[in-house]
Amino acid sequence: MEEKIQKRSFKDSSLYSKDDISVATEFTKKALKEFGSLVKAAVLFGSVAREDKVHGDIDVLFIVDDVTIVITPSVAEAYRVIVANLIKETSERLHVTTIKLSSFWEYVRAGDPIGINMLREGIPLLDSGFFEPLKMLLAQGRIRPSPESVWSYFSRAPRSMGSSKWHVNQGVIDLYWAVIDSAHAALMKLGQTPPSPEHVADLLNECMVKEGHLDAKYVETMRKFYTLSRNILHGELKEVSGVQYDE
Image (cartoon, rainbow, N blue to C red):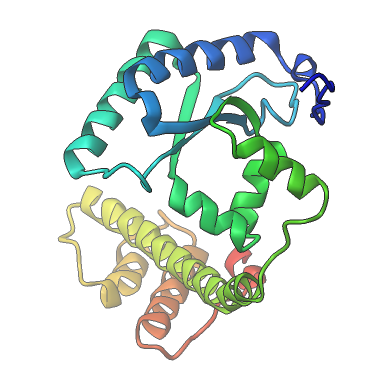
């Protein structure tokens, strides 16, 4: 065939840090010698691929073949050890993420944001023939989210909201223990035996406020946190707002 075949072009890798690409390429070559056909693609992504000015980690994505190769626990363990050793040999700035080919395909097929970001930001350092075509299909708008992917992410929102509320409540409990521990330390300094939490405020008032060692407002803070913690732990207070937390 004499007709010249034109290849669609991607963003020129010369736009990115030569040092970072050089390190990532060197690492990929070493990995290829060790793993052979196990690694189907090596992709530079993250802050380097986005051309961020600050030089931080060099993020490299390895897509490994779990479709034609059986990845046993021993193979997976050997892979982890070799990758860790290669990072030490090459550069501690390297941060390697590994994903199975089957998982990567499911992400892309469903139009999942994880797979889409890999394709959008990734610069292939090693490609067995699927990453660049998929990257081009994404650029052409031919990879779109599936209804299942849409609903999957939509259903996560309520759980994430619930998780955020739990973390705020847990933050209040942590503050409560900070207050309790501080109060216990102060009382122990005075030679007092640490009382149970419900009696801490009274003992602070008796031993420190009345003796002029402590402002009465701190006793009220102790009472406030004790009451809050009991209400949260007993389920009487379901949610603490951000404003309440700041107060």
